[in-house]
Image (cartoon, rainbow, N blue to C red):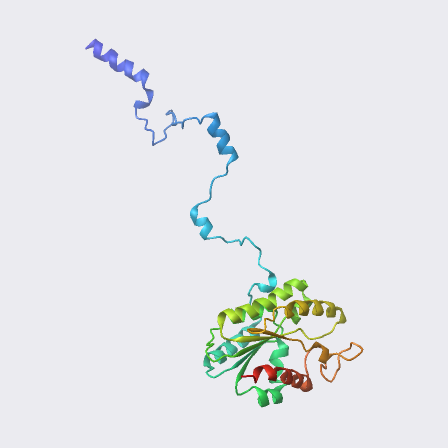
Length: 276
């Protein structure tokens, strides 16, 4: 009996954690289990090689590798209720169109076909075209509207694009504005592969300090003309006097067109739109 008690006492001092301590439950007085210390070579390797990210991280990136340009990132107009109402109105019009051959895409210069250019529009386009111009739109706003407007493209032959002038007053570079207009063209070609695009050059406007940018952007836009799906049309020379000023008879506010200005635009489009 004495020998048995002595054996139990010896076991208690050899293994002190056996008295109620478990490796998966911490209790005061119980030693925490220690992970084996890594070998020096393994420690050096762990410090020099970063851990690989989870596989899901590669499929759920929130930050693009290449920054998106402001002018090519589709955006609605912030906090402008009338703009959303106008968008809804145009979306319903597009949804109801059946035999539309021509789509006009742009800003206020395009929108005002319904005002200053109304007579010319009725004469040449009202029976076969739809006007998606919205005043004040930059390239990113036009892109947002196009991407959020379901469109039936089966009968659509041409899209007339005039955009970019409103980006001139922002901090966008000439190259960024070009990319914004080009993004509109490429979106239309992707959305409606059988449709051809007439890409209008940015028209002259005030202030005169914009004219250098307009020329440089138009030079870049002209290079998108491939002779088939994209045709470039620059009316700038027709809206400038010999001394370089903008005739008030064509652009009363040196930005928007008069009825005569819209007639010049319509006449320039006819060889493309009326061709078989």
